[in-house]
Image 1: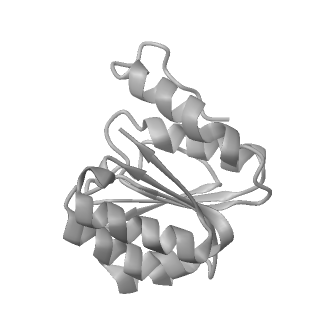
Image 2: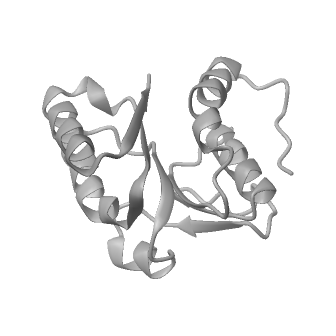
Length: 158
């Protein structure tokens, strides 16, 4: 089990993430989860890893900063890389994913490229989660179109 520090500086973000998305992914069986962006606090990583440990799943976390020592779990693989190092990252992932959490570079063109590359790895009707990206109108329209076409669940956290 992943323990969350009760004295977190960003408790509001933790509560929002936990209450907003946790309910929809907590019961995934044997989930394969891809997370882009870990951060010093490791809030999303803690929550996602807890789900993987409880449900016999696996979390793949990608970040340009080395957080490889942040968690110690047989259900976690840290990939020290940029999120657009597609060849490396895809070589370390399973064929299909149940959930993608995207919280890295907050630029529309970058996010669109990431979506094009990793979106096909999602199992049908699974979940893609963004943080802050839909503040960009063109990207928002693009995301809505893909989500509607593929009938994916899609979330945004501000």
